[in-house]
Image 1: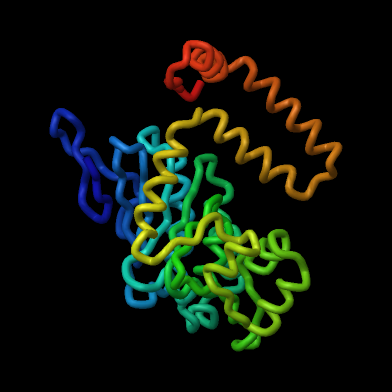
Image 2 (image 1 turned 180 degrees about the vertical axis):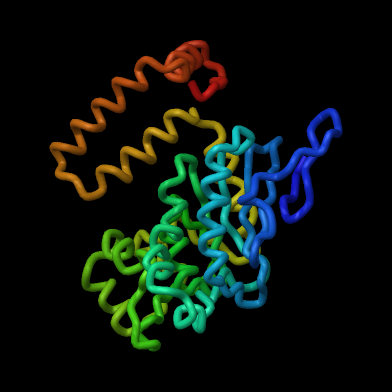
Length: 280
């Protein structure tokens, strides 16, 4: 059963109403749906046709990612949007209205998918500009349709990306391509993003939802503790030397060696059956 979390209240099995987590109430420009049967939560941008992201929305998105990270019903988080465009970017006037202190927190808010311990998938179609591109870059998996266009157009406003876009992109595609995209406000297609290693998968537009569903189900088949460990290890060693990365990998491997899930995985392998992981 899918539970939609907007401003309403959810009920427990005894039909006694329980209040939603404060982070999931009065959401600005997006909604949250939890499908407990599929261990999936969807964060859905809902301000079509362009799904412009407001200043308050950025902070709410961070809080929702943090809340879902603590929700035992959820194994995988999906970020997607209503309509033909993922997001054309942020509300431009909001930058002039926001305080310098508020603006300084933008990158922290948009990095929430990367800090989340659970796998985060983003489904991109149409425009994914500015903060729409930046929050997509902070996710673990980017499934794009052939209509997708990525861009960091801040140079046209006399500004630079401010929520981690240029930094994350440079790690993925190198300084030459990043300068071309950032300094010329150049768009790249979904297919090009896939060829460059920015996108995980590029599919026809009509297949975007099905491709996202397949990846959700695939990720649910793995051990939760192994997934959490792999994500943190890869994030933490992105800037490290090879020697340090190998050392940390060894420590993580050793800790997982003691887990129930590793024992279950080994026993299932030898018994030629599907493992039943518990996350411990």
